[in-house]
Length: 93
Image (tube, rainbow, N blue to C red; front, side, top):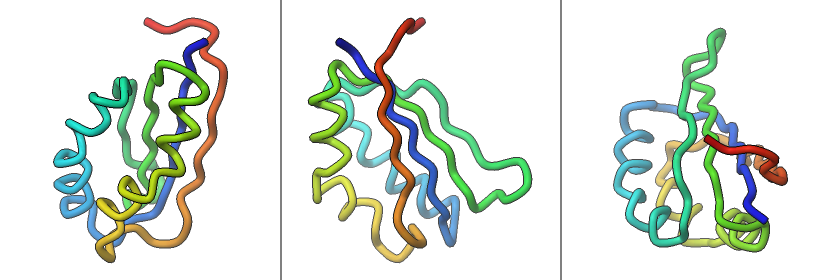
């Protein structure tokens, strides 16, 4: 069963974070993740929200706990611990 992964986290510099995020795109594709949405919070532009479609719950859990994912985005840009939520995908577009 496919899954949807929702991630929210604070960043110190959105442009720097976005560059690291974009550089990690090939790894997400290889894992079968598809970007559903990426946005900045309306009231706090340093709070980033991301949604991905994942091929399975197992893949979503593995990717969310992969230390290389966190290391690639950590470089002093992400503040605190990201809020990661995984849901069963009922319907995807």
